[in-house]
Length: 154
Image 1 (cartoon, rainbow, N blue to C red):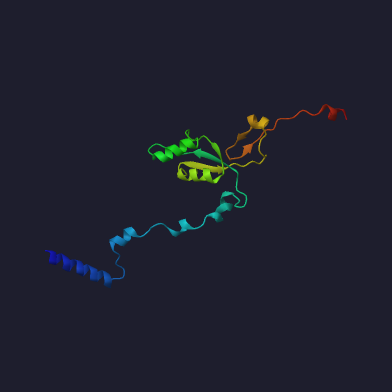
Image 2 (cartoon, rainbow, N blue to C red):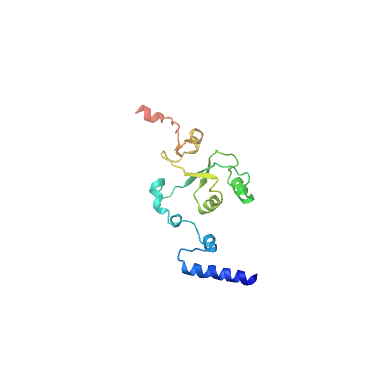
């Protein structure tokens, strides 16, 4: 019986060497099937996303859009650490390497947008009337300051 198996395997091996189109099953599963375009540098896409590589934004708006149920414990802990327990509630974080490394762990669960400040950062007295709209812009309603009485007289 073993002699028959050896002769059959030898026959398959010689046929494989003669046929250039023959691909063994082992090479099908060990060869990487990840497309090469996924490894291309993505810094060229800054125009697509509205970013500038020379002047990156200072703050992120991070919103959890997927559930953490049935996720590993490290992802649940990272979501809790970032303050994203409630879904669809935006949280603002600094754009620092430490925060960005934490966001890498949960990037499939969150949406990250840059915080745009077209009217500048609010002062402390303007914080109550400031809000973030759906485009990721910080809208500041500045309080009107009373004029000096000396300026009115002249």
